[in-house]
Image (tube, rainbow, N blue to C red; front, side):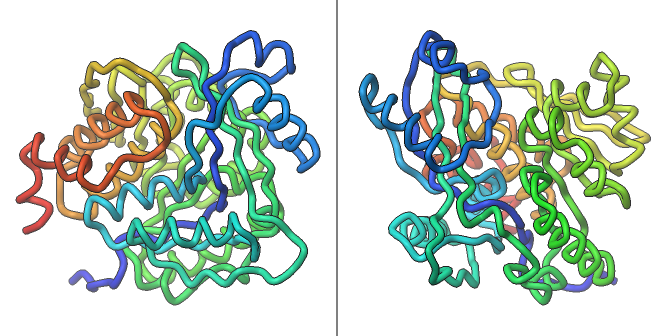
Length: 341
């Protein structure tokens, strides 16, 4: 007999305020910025980059961000019950971030840190081919720890969702260990996203730690899957990842996605759109997929919802969609009645 829980998903991850710019490949090359991945910067480095950006380009959008946060905002706007554990400073960006989560309906017991720290910021640079490149100053979120966890909420949620970016910090990995222990004791399933190929390239040991006891769902793209497993090809990488996850969801951009278990493979269709900005596509996919699964949709239905939602995100600037747009997607796919039943 299943136990009714108060939340569908509780996420743990970074709290970042995104600043997004349209840039050129020449700008990235000139400033020796590795394209299409996330690079960590200290605050002076990021301020210097922002100074250079403002000389040539205009700020397109300022929005709350962070991989898991983007997923939970999408999840909540579809109609799910979400909670987020994160850390911000007592500054303008921290106030902005808290208000952003509240508007999206994501619950949190956020306590602003009254100290000299700063809320984390991510500079997102989008090139004409729609690829996103990120340079992140983690700020106070680098000290995300057990203190920011809400163990009672972990126990009272269907899923614990872990952001791969937390692999960069020992104290964050310790918090993830505690969250996992609470989840396992209370029947809370565990989902993990690799978040970015840079995590797989440079922080694989941290991700290994997250996967030591396995997870129920693992989200990644094909490049991340191949780098992590050290094998080439979609099916070999899928098979290797199924050693550490009961279900693996590998996104493939415009080709859709593949959902794998030991018994089955489900091909998820892609949706043709004019790509403008790939920032947040994977986050949207994970949030929409988790919403579908927790609301009783089949993996194929949840995958289709996720693929369609991710396509909509890449056809707009920024990592998020409006609540109205997400509800329209549910109607378009004839899923609105099923998830509200």
